[in-house]
Amino acid sequence: MAGKADYYETLGVSKGAGDDEIKKAYRKMAKKYHPDANQNSAEAEAKFKEVSEAYEILSDSQKKAAYDQFGHSAFDNSRGPGGGGGFRYEGNMGDMGDIFESFFGGGFGDMFGGGGRGARRNGPRRGADVQTRITITFEEAFFGTRKDITLPITEICDTCSGTGAKAGTTPESCRHCRGTGQERVEQQTVFGTIANVRTCSVCKGSGKIVKEPCTKCNGGGKIKRSKTLEVNIPRGIDEGQSIRLAEKGEAGERGGKNGDLLVGISIQSHDNFHRKGNNIYLDIPITFVQATLGTDIVIPTMEGAEKYTVKAGTQPETVVTIRGKGFPSVRNNKIFGDLIITLKVVVPTNLSDSQKDLLREFAKDSGDSYKESKKGIFGKFGEKIKDKLDH
Image 1 (cartoon, rainbow, N blue to C red):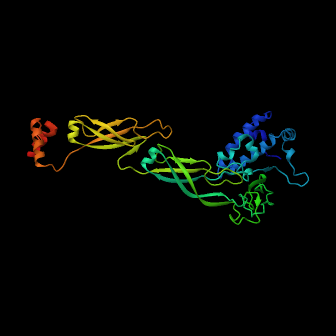
Image 2 (spheres, rainbow, N blue to C red):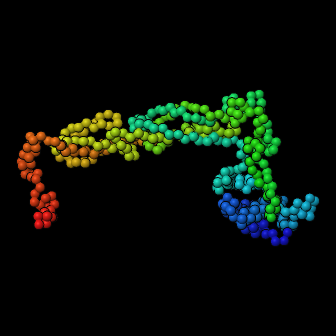
Image 3 (tube, one colour):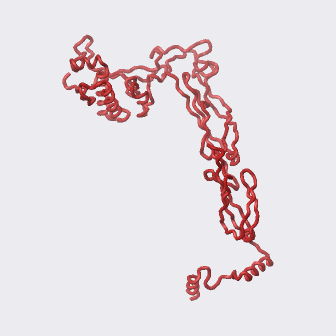
């Protein structure tokens, strides 16, 4: 078999390398050249087959001993009975098969999006998650609540218990794949015979054939029905957060667990309050008399009214923080945000003549002219502007 690369050189190890060193070298090269990581690369695919072939021989003690003694000729069947000749690589290129899972922990396919081990696709499979959304009020988000939601959910058929077979009958093992759910397809290439494993085209991977389907589910083993579920919405939940109801989603297959139900939360806006994080913000209007003289006012909170004393001389847009009157933390209801209030001084309009006279008297008594002076509010700078305007 002249021209064929040395297996040790292919894996980049010495002839005296032990099993661990060979396995480590193969793992590194298999990751590097795997077809899922090198889409549409014929060179990478060829290299991957070379390292797979090398590992197939060097990881088996008997084959390795034969190779060490006779080289590639130990596996040249072209001169033997049958004349098949050449190396035969058998496996699922997409799922990697047992050889990779023995040291990749079953997750090799997932690293490249391969979807896991194909040889187990006819085993239990978890059902799909279901997503929905509900809208609650601002108050319900603060205090927590319970809501009933109704939505279509796929469940195991209660007539056939998920087998898909008519009552009194049972599914038969698929003869095409012998109940494995997979079929093997061989291809002749320049590198030899490649045997790939794929989902059985007859039973679609179930390993079973239903000859007399269930009349309720038409052989599918599942039915979709409207289902009402109660959702417990915790205190302090925020817009965009979701609640997970474990195993309340779509039914699994072949004994697999149900998926989960994910309930997204939308919160209606409030007429007065608005929320940022766990803080609540509120604008409170006060009169200019209250701001000037000071007074006691009543402030609404989510849990009742609070008394607050406005200090004399309070300026417009004064911000007041009332600790612990915001939203509770959804993770710890003993922790609360704050209520942050902005005092909005309201200037009156449509004053009566007597009210205007009182204000003029107030301005005169305080030495504050309500009319614009020559300098204006900008002092000398304003005076210069006024002079330019006069000229």
